[in-house]
Image 1 (cartoon, rainbow, N blue to C red):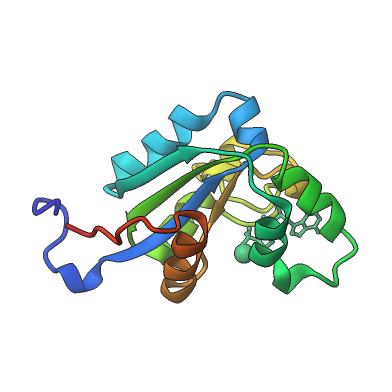
Image 2 (image 1 turned 45 degrees about the horizontal axis):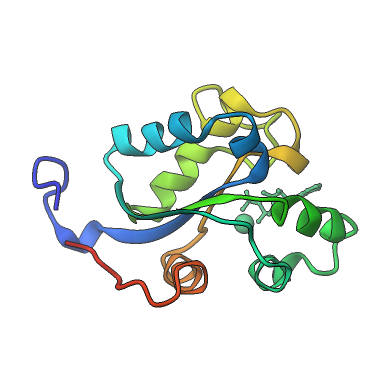
Length: 147
Ligand code: IDP
Ligand code: MG
C-alpha cells in the first residue's frame, strides 16, 4: 500500500467520504476525488447511488433534534455519490474544511468550492471508529480492503 507515501501501516485508517448531491449536480466529483488522490488517499470503493431515507436518518442521527434536520435529510437523499477511502481520518477532515464554507480556509474543498452550510458538497467521517461504521453502513458486504 503506497510504500512511497506512508512508512507505517499503523498510521493508516479508513474513512467514508461522501460527495453530496450538490457536488454531484455541479460536476465536482472528479475534482474532489482528485484532491484525495493527490493527497495520497487510496480509493477502495466507489458507487453512485441515491441514499435511502432510513440510512440518511441513521447517518445523521446525532443532529435529529436540530431545526435543519428535515432539510438535511431531503438534501442528502436527493442523490449522492459515495467513496470508501483509506488514508487518515483527521487529514481528510482538513482537506474538506470547516462545516460552514464561510469559515473553511481557502485551499480546502469547502473553502474553494462551497458557499452555504446547507450545500457543503462533501462528507467525511469524523473519527476512525465512525469511518469503519459508516463504511459498513454505506458499503454493506464489501470487504474492508486495506492492502
Ligand atoms: P460536518 O459535515 O462538518 O461533520 P456536522 O456538524 O456533522 O458537520 O453536520 C453534518 C451536516 O449537517 C453538515 O455537513 C451540513 O450539511 C449539515 N448542517 C450542519 N449544521 C447546519 C446548519 O446550521 N444548517 C444547515 N445544515 C447544517
Ligand atoms: Mg459530522
